[in-house]
Image (cartoon, rainbow, N blue to C red; front, side):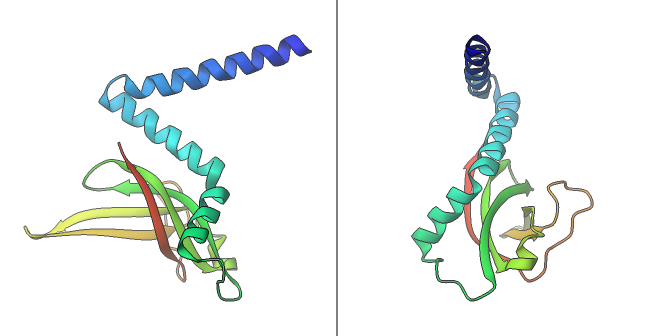
Length: 143
């Protein structure tokens, strides 16, 4: 039994090293792996990230029936970014938020926009805005 546990630990360590080494294999593959690794880290550490943001921004004393949570950002537009967003809103509505959709674009030649929309899906198909919620903080990493 102990031998099996040791093999599992060694295998997991090698997998982790391989994943992070893969971040440097070329821009396209590295960006994809980096994005995947960050998305997994956001999922695994969402509560800790949320507490840290609340502590930093003073969000501990929210109105009754209001809460915050951290979800991954899905980015569409002028570049590849991945990260996390803290979303705030009524607790029952907030439970519907699965991600934040970041939409970037240009208006004419001089203006650029960046929209952050809490949505009910982590897929870019069949996605709907979750009304009554808003983004209160963003953490992102350039790919």
